[in-house]
Image (tube, rainbow, N blue to C red; front, side, top):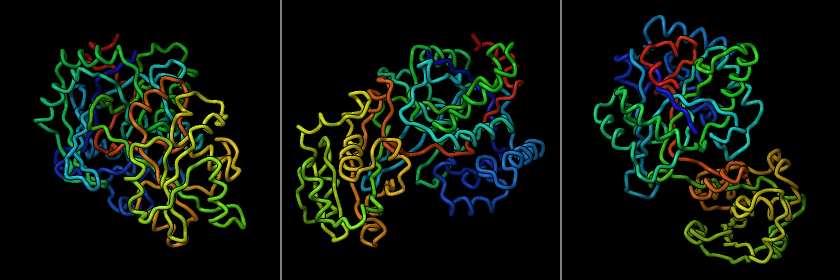
Length: 439
């Protein structure tokens, strides 16, 4: 199954590493415009490599990368290794500190058809092309995508726990409130054990579909230009952060739906009338109770309208068989599939997943309180409050070969950019120590 390799990571030099918070950045697809502008003011922040600016952004990134490497801003580790990466965090309203344990390595960039790396969402071609161009110009990866493997025996965690006791560096608190810690494992026997465990596993891509597909596109382009390639070249591999799907500290947060508009002339009362053939609709006094009222209940949602009225709605079980999209039973069972089919298609007339992905009338919001505020301020006509997708649902959908509705999962916390860099240049595979781990 999955082939992984150690890598010679590029990192900020030890002096800069003492203040690593100043140089890390959010991932390219979650960083806000305001965050970008603040980060750009630091000439050494990793945002300049991951989300470059200018008339030729990829060229600008390459120029800056070469400067940083030549001046010693970034230094490459002498020996290859697997990098332990822990994220300590708390969830809103909870005093418990979680620790998501994982490791960063190179993984072969498998095509989806190989069924080794599995996806659960579709991608946007423009974003994939952007990532592929940046990789082609720089041959450098600024952040790891997030993959999941399942090991109920938790065999690798003991090696990770040992390594993390001597960290290379750590953040005090990243942009999302997590504390990130990096360490390295360079013991050959331990690295081989990591390879052996992953060799019998499939990997589910939790986060980073566009970056992963960018690596696939770059690999395919290099193969077309170099048909005599051996398969060991650096561009055959992709930087990935792997975590154990069996761990309780793997958290998925819900993403709610805001309806920014309703059909012209449709009142709130008429909207509720259209919902009633499909859902039981129960008025509730306090909208802030909605998350608790729907928690753990299949096909249940909170609804908040501009008149300040809240409702708990739940699909009538007998109508579920009307869900006629051509997809797998695992996808049809999802709350969000039910919401998109019966509300967006049947009630609002936005027919089919493709049309819904392009429809500007829906917004995806993670913060529950923001949902209520935007409805109160007249920025949206309605808010649908959802439960989180479970890890079991993610696994079942991926193994069914299908994908989820857009914005179904929000794995928390996100990995950060600039914590560890990876080169895919040809010379990355020539180190004698690396050759020990090649098949």
